[in-house]
Length: 427
Image (tube, rainbow, N blue to C red; front, side, top):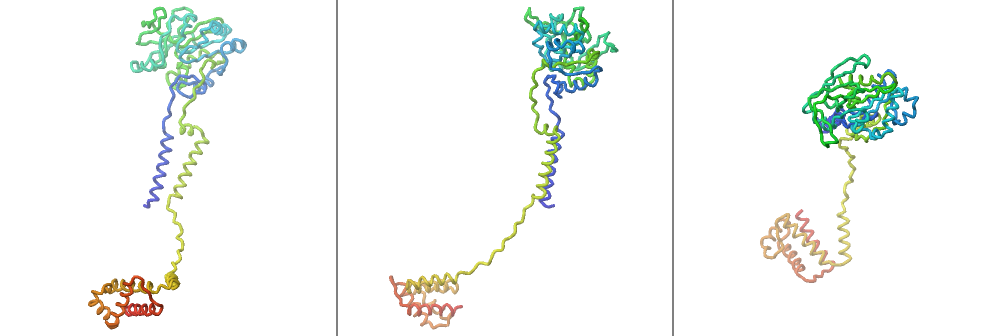
């Protein structure tokens, strides 16, 4: 298999692996408690609100009006039940007397008001609650290591078709507890837990642990309506409504508001925090971006298929190089002729002859001491007499030893002809 084919297969497999890893990567959930109507996280309320809009017989809506605005709109308020679902900390506005009065006015006008939050703080005395259990979400998570489940008992006897029932749920979903001894309140949900009841005694400035029984959901009739308090607001969240048996328990709680259209006020919720969504996860949730991402991968794949090979460039036609040796010789000869340096030209010719004989015939005529051996060899090679060759070589050596040699043109011609004859007789 060609290396180009292997390379293309590797790129295709790599792109498919990346796409599979991103598409099958599990979603990263945000476990912060928000109760925001647009949040799909476990402790948001988008799924819960959609479920209530489909299941509440008289209707279910969201509103951003606060308690004072709802009281002023007395006609609308008297025809609706109110749900206030809040975070862990109590609503600060409830500590003001006119906010408490607004709650009571709504109930007296005929609205059922359900307030769900982890703690009611200093409102306990105003609402007739003896104690509120000290708890927070961090401690709930730590209790998961010691408690596998909590037992919640639906103890209501006058809440429509529902009879007493026991629910076994996760400790984090059961929330805090209340200690209620006032006969004005009816206990709807009671929690049996193995851990002691803990609360903060402001007089003693310390936490007190008792064996008192916890109550999660209570009701009090006031005028034409009822006031409900729930210390496990997580039961009214996305996570609760999509899991058994907390979904059944949440529907039972919301059934207390089913006789009229229900308004859930979001006026007291904090501003939603910006969600940090990974880029790939965000792209996968947007159909146009997902299509563009897929087309980009397809484009890269096609690019590798059609361009992942070495392109053969056309080989240019190279013309045969021109032999300029003749022009060069003519130019050099012209220079020597213009200078009229006949002796130098003759000596260069003689130097070339010596080099040629040494390289081609292994005859060295550079020194007179070797003439007894070299001249006979040269005579045998060229066919000239030893006397003639010795005479030519001796004259050229004399010219070579002179400091400022001078030759006429005729003498130069004679010497060069002798050299050429020796050279030609060898070839």
